[in-house]
Length: 330
Image 1 (tube, rainbow, N blue to C red):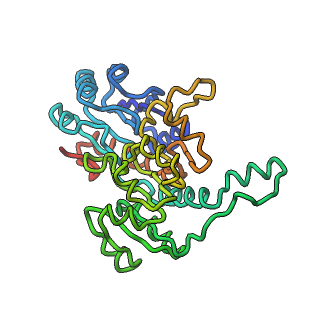
Image 2: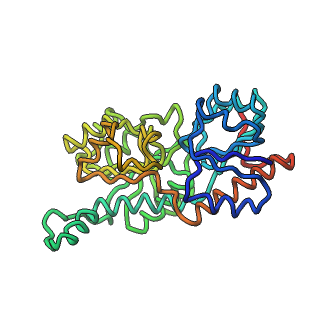
């Protein structure tokens, strides 16, 4: 089977090639899939896409017209795919539902610790031969209340790690995780209560109509003054303008972000020679209490291996006429 891999990054190519084991003809395409680039898939049986690719109705129509029958996501989320249209066109869609929840969970806690203990600022001082400690005071994680929005696989692991620190755990989710309640003493509360009572708030929900901009001015105003907010899930869970305003007033004391509302034209690319056009992220970069990483929470050897293996498994199932358990139906 001929497979076009869009948004092919250097960090994943060897993993995908290794997992393929020469079964499929893999063609790596650097550009993102969108309406302007979709015709590059002409003559391919399948297309594989990443987080910043678009598989909306116009793109899917082009893919179908060019002979594409399968869409293999290299992600867990599928909000960038019009599943109804794919079903109408007879394009099968499969995803990678779980590649390494530990990778994202551990990165989440790493952001918390780095911000709390001001590690970047401390390192920069040392490199300037400045060994003073003024301005580097943090706080004990032990005893702090952490609000976890979303207690699926990643949120569950975050809760276990923070329980080890001695944190009090609050949770908000449509589905109650009995294990978190029984094993860790997690208390499920409303989003309003979570915002009011948490010292740290971390996001681990998928992007849906219900969760889009769940962190907005209304909920930020409910939060404790100086709260730490962390988002390693989806950029559009957070209304960035509201966060910037809250950072300026110090309502939000720390903001850790691995995803960004308008990341599509920025993340995964080298813009070091460009003039930054995005005013919101430029403003965020001026705060010394904001820690930004470029959608790298998933980036571990384990996760990349699992993504590649599951992606190839899904493609194998497509070719063999079998239904993958990772297939998404509308």
